[in-house]
Amino acid sequence: MAIKGFIEVNVQKCKGCQLCATVCPKSVIGYSKVTNDKGYYYAIMVNEECIGCGNCAQICPDSVITVYRAKKQ
Image 1 (cartoon, rainbow, N blue to C red):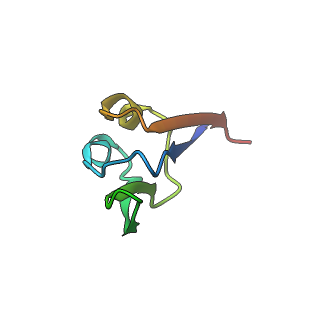
Image 2 (cartoon, helix red, strand yellow):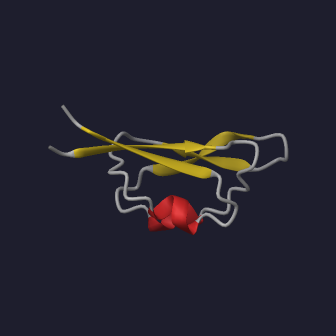
Image 3 (spheres, helix red, strand yellow):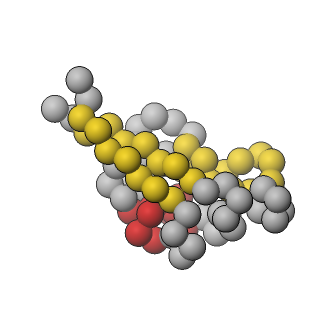
């Protein structure tokens, strides 16, 4: 079975540094068109191709990304 991934971003703590997007092998991460309370364009999922590799969570300097993995049925 294939693995399906999903990321969750703490929107208010994300500083929009874009490091996560640079390491994503499936180009899943983009940035919002609106800012959070601190004025940053935060990371968001832009497609459903996430494989749950965890690269984004590992590189995030503020640990604001949580990666979930589940088997596709």
